[in-house]
Amino acid sequence: MTLTFLLPFLVSFLVSFIFTPAVILFLKKKGFVDDPKKHKHPKVVHSYPVPRGGGIPIFLGIAVSLFFLPLDKHLQGIFLGALIALVVGIFDDIFEEKIHPLLRLGGNFLAAGVVVFSGIGIAFINNPLGGIIRLDNPQLCFSLFGDSRCLWLLADLFALLWIAWTMNFVGWSGGVEGQLPGVVVIAALTIAFLSLRFSADITQWPVIILALVVAGSYLGFLPWNFSPQKIMPGYSGKSLAGFMLAVLSILSTAKVATLMLVLAVPLIDASYLVFKRLLSGRSPVWGGKEHLHHKLLALGWSKKRISVFYWSITALLGLLALQLNSRQKLYTMFMLVIAFLGIILWLSYLSASLKPPGQDNG
Image (cartoon, rainbow, N blue to C red):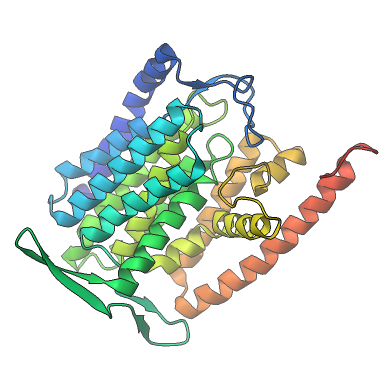
C-alpha cells in the first residue's frame, strides 16, 4: 500500500521538477516574461523580468495521475476542467493579465461546470450543531445521448460556486515567490492524510493518490519559484491550484470544512478584500496592493519570511484540521476571522505610522 501512494507522489514531483527548467527556457525564448518595467500593475512586487506560465510543468506533473487512477467519468471531468483552467491561465500569462477579470472568472465557472457535470458534487454538509444538511434535493433528471443524468440543483450550485471561489482566493494568495506552491503542498497533504484515515475504504484511494500527485507537482515546482524566483506560477498555476484543491475537498471525506480551515488566512484575506472593495464601489475581482502579504512587505518583511510565515500558519491549521470536529472547526474559523481583522487594522496603523510625514496614506 505504501508504494501505491508513494510512487505517484514521487513521479509527479520528478516530472514537475525536471520539466520546469525546460519551460523556463521556452518562455524566455518566446518572450513570455513579466517585466515590471513594462507591466506596471499595483500588485507587482518583483523587480526583474520573470517568466509566467508555471502552470505548464505543474499540469504535466498532475497529468501523470492518469497512469495511476481509473479513467472513469469523474477523472475525465477533473482532467478536462484542469485543462480548461490551464488554457485560460496560459492565455492570461501570455498577454500579461490583459484578459478582463470577468472573462477569467467565466473560465473558472466553465472549469467548475465540467466537473459538476461529470457527477462530482456536494450531496451534504456537516451541521456544526449536529447532524447533516442534505443538498441532494431538488433534482432535475434528463436523458443525454442515451445516458440518464440527474442534476442536484442545490448540491451542484454549491459545488460550482465553491470551486470557482476557491480558484480565485487561492490564486490571490500567490503574491510573493514560493508562497503559493508551499501552501498548496501543505493543503494537499492535509487532505491526503485525512483521507488515509479511511484507507480501508478503497473508494478513498483515488482521492489519496490525486492529493499526493497535486502535492508532488507543486513541490517539484517550488524550488524554481522560491526566492529568487526563476519562474512564477502565473494565473495558470494559481487557478489550477485552486481548482484541484476545491475538487479534492469535495471528493474527500473532509468536504469543504477542512480546506476552509487549512486555507483560512487566504480565504479570510480574500473575503475581507471583496467586501471592502464592494463597499467602496470598486470591482471585487480587480487586483490591487491590499492583501496581507502586501502589508507585510510594506513593514519591511522579506519575501522569504512572508512565504515561510504563510507555510507555517497553513501547516499549523492543517494539524488542527486533522484533530478538530465540525463544531470545533466552526469555532476556530470564527476566532480566526476576529484575529485576522484585528491584525489587518493593526498592520494598517503601522503602515500609516511608518510613512514619511506629508505622504498620502491612501
